[in-house]
Length: 623
Image 1 (cartoon, rainbow, N blue to C red):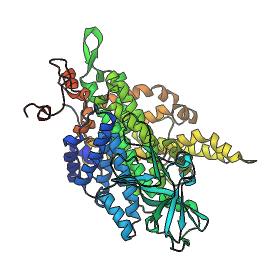
Image 2: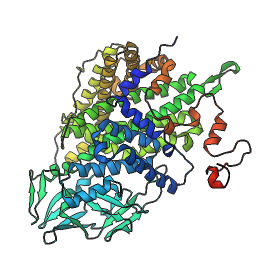
Image 3: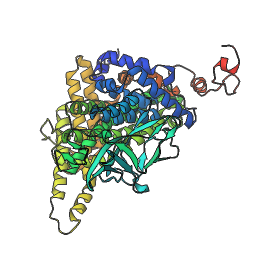
Image 4: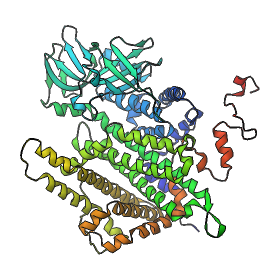
């Protein structure tokens, strides 16, 4: 009899605070035909479908205020939206999380502002968030769009000083759909620049783009077919009531500026609080894509056979070279899922521009999108040529992870920033002392957390030593910091791995069923061994791991992966992903793959002709 973890227990742990009723609500919503994937639609058709799906989400999940209040459901919706379509994810996170999220946090109740907000909530207009500029990406504090206040008119004039300051690249193109945006711009009053603030600005109505606003649609992109564009402003009037402040600053009608702090940087951080949640949502969506890719690749490996010794055929997953990288990736996907719960809890329990919450969101987004891209890429390779076709979904998820790496702050930049946050003590410190016996076995569970903590501490000390060297001359400290950049990236990944491992082991300890705890510890062990493998040079140089242990590392990992093969199907089923949006012909059991693939692609296998997908009544035949 197989020793398999109870599926319900694993599913409960992975869902965290998401209730069964909320999960059922999403399952029923995404089971609707409207959300089924169709890779044969042209880009314009995919874009139009994404807007229809966005409206369906609004109609069935309710207004933004309700969605934002149901935090766990809101995060999971982002993840399932990403599995459905990258274009839909762009529209959903911009409209709800960034645009309406920012507005509702700063709603003053002003009647003029309320009318604009209510139109967004009814989806009479789709919301956008315009911060990034063509020449100022991750350095958005230096963006150059200006909102100059005119007290005689009680309004701002919003302007783009030159093409490099064009807003890039939210989907602001008209296409018959009115748009309203939260725009980040420099507030200038009485000739003084008060730094970056947020403004709510209608961009278009049913008749088209409003005067003074120019939109240049960008070219198409693989998988993501949202109508991305450059947006420029030329003296666009914005009422004083549409200045969105967080309560720490205000502008009086006569143009006098009031702020609780004179620090423009601190005020700037107040404009980016929605980005903190958006980074959790993007990272969580990347985690979901890695889970979906693993589900498809592992099920493909279970039933796809290939040649074996003595003329036999065997499933791909029976080969260690095939299952070891996939099961290792599965362990990392579990670690990421529990890290999301920790990052979400910290963000949920924090208000305002708390630097510790921002540090955790930055680390989570940087680490998970980086790891997810590696996982999905591995899955794409393990399923061969079939993984390059959209009908099998993995290539869509790979492109999404690339988008996620760039969205809401480039992940490498966030990893560098997080390295500085580790140095500053802004992230949760290790819960376990970092002392580790170099002669102990890597399979000893008591070594895992001390070993990960010791690596993090060792890299941290090394970076501090490099940055603490005497400097002389202009730019000298930058040169020191620049040279330490690779180590800062390593420090962040080490901290992320330690935090993820803590959560994974906590979940194992908190499992009601001892069998579930046993399998989660196996996953934790694979995760630790993979971290040691990836950083083998550091561990060898630090003498924390015996060289003989490093030589046996690959076999030890393969042995641990072998112990999970019998339970792989339950481990991936526990992710609780919607089968309707992750369906893939190569993941199907017991069927004719060719016939299934042809059916999904509109091919009539009996005649070899392309079967029309239009309903019979529309084609002129019987219903």
